Length: 154
Image (cartoon, rainbow, N blue to C red; front, side, top):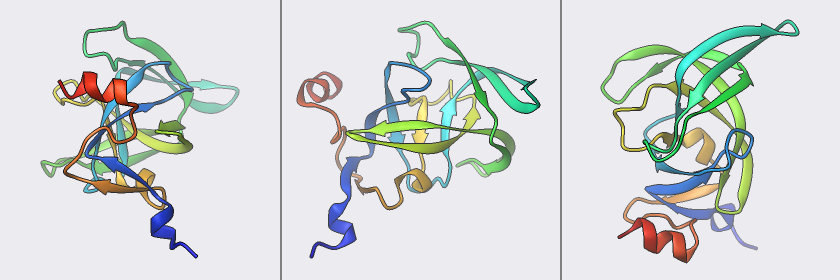
């Protein structure tokens, strides 16, 4: 009988991921086991109510200038205090959406944050990875097909 550990897919420190409920784009993401919560680049975040529930509207810009931002409307799941890598704390809205890494599709929570100064528009934290993936910090794009991998690693 294989151990649970052997059933997990291997990911590198960076991967192409998809958020199929939000956009059709494949998005470069940093895999960060030091971060608990995943983070998604969002700008112009607005709160509003729809049918008595809390919703968020924001611009999702994952193309770093290579594509137009998309306006997204999603239910707000929570608001949490997040501590960034530089030690600063910030209250951020939390959303839940489907995340695809390789062939695995699953629900994941994301804090919305301005990541325009970051190299990757998405950071995947350990809560999303737990029980699903093992991380090889010395490799990249292990869950991308060969053609994508060749293009990205040039």
